[in-house]
Image 1 (cartoon, rainbow, N blue to C red):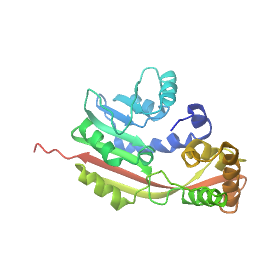
Image 2 (cartoon, rainbow, N blue to C red; image 1 turned 180 degrees about the vertical axis):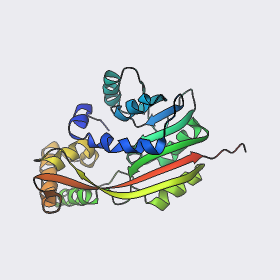
Image 3 (tube, helix red, strand yellow; image 1 turned 45 degrees about the vertical axis):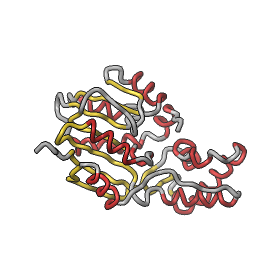
Length: 252
């Protein structure tokens, strides 16, 4: 998926702003090595670096990494895919905010994370959980099907049981879990749902002719107005899954 780094920072900064308190779960220590998996434009990576940890930010989007390098030249950033990355070092911790729900091949990603962690190393993540943005996906599906287009979801929003079981299967001990609703205010008071779909939902429209894409987005937005627009602002119901786990030390 192609990412617009400037649009992301301008109208969807809530993604990394909400992720700031996830750092409290990580508790980064000075001099330890931390991998920020799916670092985007690098804001949280830079916050990690301020703690004294030796941080590497990794993202599959070249435009996101270019922006991160421009704004945080003293932090290491790499362009790589979460399902097949290979780095020459192992880490004390892997941190990931709002990334893993974009990846359907979770098994490959967890294998990569496990291989890059030291024994006893920790994994701290937040991702979309079961039910995340259901109102938006339902509205988009209805608007697409009204025009005769098939709707195909592409995100991975697991339940608590599904994801913690997967972590255990891939060699992690789950130590802490939080599953919660988060009503999220969007930045654009006029076309927030349209802008959100342009930023995050482009894959819905890959088989839709250009001329029909905006009308579908506008229809979806209007159908959500009664429930998601109030006091001149747009809101989405996010559902988040937050997990702290550690790599099982098989040498013991």
